[in-house]
Figure 1 (tube, rainbow, N blue to C red):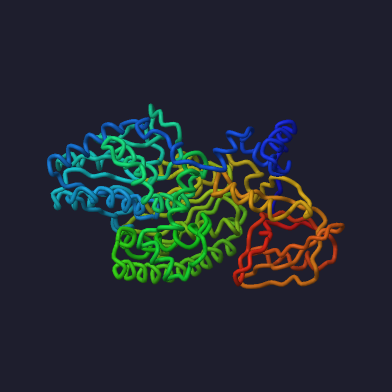
Figure 2 (spheres, rainbow, N blue to C red):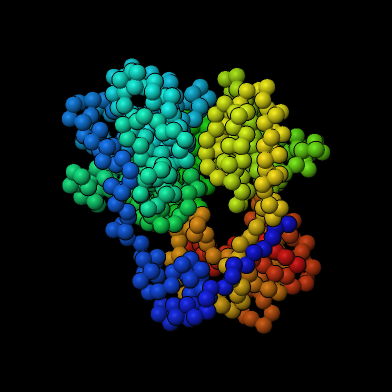
Length: 565
């Protein structure tokens, strides 16, 4: 059961004013005003994003220091190591900075830590590798903001760090040559929600500005930025929305060879959306680090050679198949563990542990468990003598704060409001599970434990038409902070052709009494609603309006989020 929450209608006078100025329906004007767009100029900026509206990268604290350290390295012929996390955000960031630096300097290498031997973030092994290769500067991307000890260790070996991170800092910052992180105290950068790759892009943007490199040169890197934005689930608002808009344009018109090859190998020929990046590109790039090595993902992303890219792409596809199989089997095992434990089923958290689970997919499994048991969830396995795993949250609940309250029982943790990673000693598992349950039970609100469908407005089927769809498309790119509008329509009925297809998906053709329009609908994973549809009693439906392309013909389709009798 889901709870429906209809957003409060925007100020009627503001809606009418904007409706007249833009010559659009009040329904569409209401959506804009709800998003804080109240006049022609702000609407123009929203509908026509511009790279000229990106923030000045020199507003970011330590940007001058970072550029000066790179200038010094290049001038003195120092070897630079580009270091990043093994997920999509980290590998895309490494690819971006590596490709940029090697376009004018040849003493550059890159490093992705081994998920299983080194774990998340900056490792001693990575620093040792840098020292062995004669590197005196490491540019760390999507990690490092809490790596105080590792930065000290690097200094002992004569290695400086530039840290480019977007995670929350600890109480004490590492002693790096420069730290680029909008979330650090004293940073005046106006947008705080960049991805790790986005921080790397700002470094490159600043370098171009400082060295009179044409801004057009930056556009070639935006395909990497947009896959990081989509996969790391950062808000698609403000600067991220501009980067995502132009990143999608880049990936759909002139993607780098590795991405083009990956799309060809998977027979993807349509124009890509953020959703496609989340479900097609992201999982495959992530699979490299989950199953083998994130270095394979970087090889794909930096390769200009068709054959090399094809080899890397085929290997990544194989890893993704293996990842899917592991995901399914471990999820089933975890669900059986929960179902067989009455006390666990009654908790407000899920904490499951099995030492043989594959470390690379526990984060995915945590997300799957939330689909069944909607509550903060941690999935743990064993690695290198420690219990380690991933945590995922539900809407509006700050998971990071809850884990922080249990930090005395942990060896290491990091992340943000909705996702985190952690490790602990085996003897602390029982105490941690109990403490986490206690903290969450005391702080979570009951409504947070029920999945919510947020509805933008109530409309009739008669209000849906191709012009409305053409304007709705321009609200994108869609994602957190700028979700595709969801509507509710009351008292609809099925034409009588409803059927369950594929993996429990419900297909139907719905109409509203008194209106001529009938719409093809798809309700993913909602096959159990078939009985409601077939009762011949009108019901309410909430949905997003989409375009469906089949055999070259484009039609409107409703993507159903929920049904209520």
